[in-house]
Image (cartoon, each protein chain N blue to C red):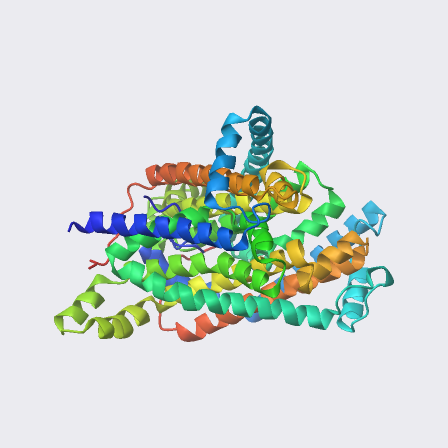
Length: 296
Length: 261
C-alpha cells in the first residue's frame, strides 16, 4: 500500500530539508518592517471593504448580499445577544460560541491524545507503520464529511456526534505529521543515542520527541484548523446548534446580514485560533536558522 | 517470521476487527434503516453495479461530482500557482496578499456554504466555487513556500551567468520549487473533492454527496454506506493518479531518512 497523502501537509514541507525551515514559521521575511506591513494591510483591507460595498450595491438586494455596514451592525447585535425576530428559536450568540469552542477543544484534545502516540510508533517501527499507514492513507483520502450521515443516524444528533466529527477531521493530520517528523529526523541524532546505549524509553523521550517537536506542532496547528472545520460543519449539517447551526438558521430565515455576521464570527474564530500555535511556534523554535532567498 | 508478512497479518487482523466491530455495533443498534451493518452494505454495494436504476443514478451523480471537482481544482491551479509565485518572488505582493491568504486559509470552509447558497443558489456553480475556495489557499501556500525558500545560491549562480528574470523563474525557481508545487496540488485535490462533497451534502440534491445525504435521510443507510465506499474508491484513485504523476515529476529528488527498527 502506498502512502497517498502528501509527505507533509503544509507550506512546502515536501522535502526534509525544507521542513526545518517551514516548521519554524516565517518571521519577518527579508526584514520587512512592521509599519510597512501595517500600511499594506490597511490598504488591502480598504480595497476589500470597497469591493464588498460595490458588490452589495450591484446586487441591490440586501437579502442576497448585505453590505459591510449592515453586517457590522448585525455582528454588534449578535454579540449583545439580540437575535432577529424571524429566527427567534435560535440560540444566543454567547452560548453558541461557547458550545462551538467546547466541541473544538474536546475534538482536538482527543485527536492529540490518540494521534501523537500512534504517529510516534508508526514513525519508529516498520511493523506499526505497515498497519497504520494503509488505514491512514485510505481514510485521509476520503472526504470525512461523507461520514456525517453515518454518525448522525448511528448515534443521533448530539454533542458527542459533533465532537466525534471534529476528532475525525483532525486526528489523521496529527498522525501523519508526527510520523513524518519522527521518520525524517536526523539519522546522526539517532545514532548518537544508540551509541551511548539509550534505552528505548530514553531514546523516545530524550531524542525522538524533541527532534520531531516542530513537526508535531505543525501537525497540531493544521489539526486545529481541521477541528474547527469539523465542528462547524457538524453543527451546521446535523443539530443546528452552536455557531454553525446559527449560521444555517439565519440562512434559512433570510436574515442575510445576520448570516454574514455569523460567517464573520466563524472566520474570526478560525483566524484567532490558528494564530495561537503560530505564535507559540515562533517562540519555541527561534533557534532554527535558515538561509533565505533575497527577493525583489 | 518475516517482518513484512507479520505486518500484513496484523493489518489483515485490524481489517477483520473493524468489520466485526461494525457488525456488532449494527447488531446492537438493530435498526438497519438507520445504521446498516457490513452485510447489508455489501449487498447494497453489489446493487450499485447490478441494479440498472441505481447504477444509472450513481453514474449520473458521479459525473456531476467529478465535473465539479475538475473545474474547482483546475480553477484553483490556474489562480493559485501564479499567485504563489508572485508572493514568493516579490515583496510587494507578499506584503499585500500574505495576511489575506493566511486569513482565508484559516476560515473553516463550511462558512462559504450559506454565502454561496444565497449568491449562486443550489447549483453546480456553487459547488465549483466552494471547491475552488477550499483548495486554492493550500496551493498558494505550498507554491509560495517553495518559491520563497529556493536556495539563494542557485539563483545567484544563474544571475552571475547573466540569466534574465524570466529565465531565473522558469529555469531555476520553477524546478527548484516543483516538489512543493506537487505537494500543494495533491493537497489541493483532496481539498477540492472535500469541498464538492461538503457543498453537495448541504444542497442535498446534487452529485454523489447529495445522493449519500438523500439516501441516509430516506432511511436507506445501506445504500448510503455503499455510496461512501464508491466515493472512497474514486477519491483514492484520483489521489493515487496525482501521486504517480508527482513522483514522475520529482523523481530526481533524493532524501535521507532515519534508519528504523
